[in-house]
Structures are given as structure tokens and as C-alpha cells.
Image (cartoon, rainbow, N blue to C red; front, side):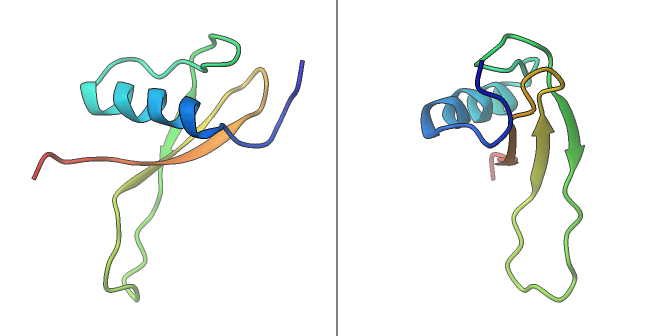
Length: 71
């Protein structure tokens, strides 16, 4: 099993869709529940996206995902 690194575009798309729908975030590679943490915004940056960082505790893949507010 490949471990660490990031998710490919297809996996990121699946995760962002789950995040948008409020569904549980599950690793597309190994089907384990992901941990998540909000990414702190920097006040020095004029344009800042709202993001969360997710990590799979089994395969160690990570991703920073945009949180879409629907506005």
C-alpha cells in the first residue's frame, strides 16, 4: 500500500463533494474516517479561502480542502 503524500484530483473531488454535502469524510484510498482541522486565516492576506486540512490516520495521505459556503 502506498502511504503518505496527497490525494489525486479525483480523490480531492470526492472529498470536497462530501465536505459540501456535510457527509462524513472518509479516505477514498483506504475507507478510514479522516481527521480534520480548520486552517487558520492570515490577516495579512487580502483574499483568503476558508479551508480545512484532512489527514488519513491509516495511509497518512493529506489534503487542504476549500470549504464552500454557498454564497
